[in-house]
Every structure is written in C-alpha cells, then in structure tokens.
Length: 149
Image (tube, rainbow, N blue to C red):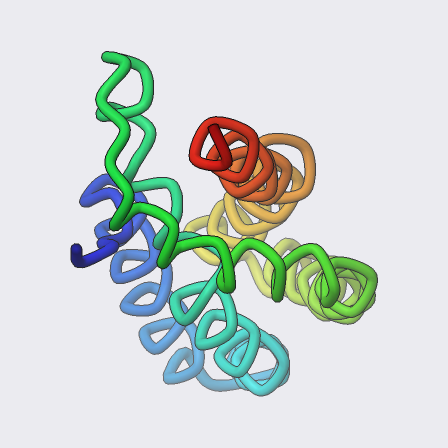
C-alpha cells in the first residue's frame, strides 16, 4: 500500500514554497529574511513529507473503519515521528524565529503580502504541532492496537 500525503496538505506545502521563493526575490531585508526562512524550512519540509505527513493519507479509510494488514507498513513512519517529535519542535522554534523576523521586516518595508506569508507559515507550524503530528502518531498507535488482534 502506498501512503500519500493528503492532497490538501501537499498543495499547501507547494503554495507556501512558491510564495517563499517569490519573497526571497523581493530584495532588501525582506528578501534576505525570506531566504533565511527557506534555509531552515526546506529541510524540515523534507522530514515532514518523508514520514510525518504520509500517514495522514490513511485517515479517510480509518474513519470508515477500513483497516488492512498492509497499513502496518505506515507504523515505522509514525514511530520515527514519535521519536523525532522533540527535534521537529526544535525545528519549529528556529522556523518561528525566522518567520517573526520576516514578518517584522516585511511590515517595515511595506510588503504586506510577505508579512501575510509569514503569518500563514506561523499558523501552519502551529497546526502541525497541535493537530497534524499528533494525528500521525495516533494513526500508528491505533493501527498497532487494531492489527495485533
């Protein structure tokens, strides 16, 4: 079974990436701040897309009560996320600091579209911490319980 990131999340990541590339080309301190965000954000996105978000693709099936033995293959991803959760949160603190600086300089340089981008990315980080990562971990825990029967 293939584990795919839900299309809505994948599209959101692609859109955020595209807007960050645009911001990095804005010039001035805003452009420099956007580049600094990208330096810490892109390696983090790779981790998310590698093991943190793919388990979420199972949510619709699990919500319908559809469970199959091949879903057990997602458990190593959720175990890795659980093990690396503290590091993911440390990554988020670095990303947040870079985003707060981007927000500050974008406001000062009168670039509201990039200030809005920073705000959206801050909210995105928060959603991951409060909802997405815990949901991925719970998927693994749920499957372990259900598949051991």
